[in-house]
Length: 194
Image: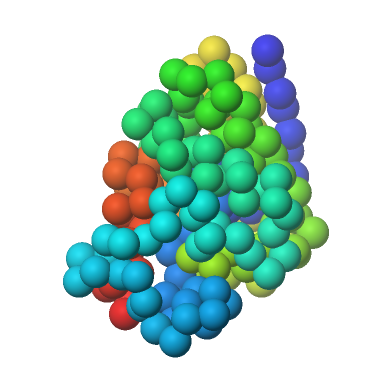
């Protein structure tokens, strides 16, 4: 099966996706949105997060389906495989899962987030990385091509804007960390930004 989609836009999770995605924001904003006054429920190392309902994957403009796709990927992050090539003007990523349900969530997430960036509709996921802000602020500065191949979902994202290229590189690393370590990567990032 092959899916080809070229847009002048950006992607949250090239796991994005876990995009993506993506994921990793100021914990105070997340806590406030969840009705807490601070890091309630977090231990000193970020433990104690509700990994059953994953409320941090909700957003101000995220649909329940989008939040559930993220939850599916985080719950089964061990099934994800990801390769990243940093290009001088962007990135090339290949992301796949050994689980068909996770792969379906991944593809839906990537396609959906690319469309959101093209429309400038930030889902404002509570634990979303600040790295993603530039994608929604300057969607015309990024070109994205995705292909669904036997390898997985292949994304090539490029830009002539040096700030966008930097953001693409940083976000690719964030997504790779989440694909490798799941919510632990999110917790650590939140504690560091703390």
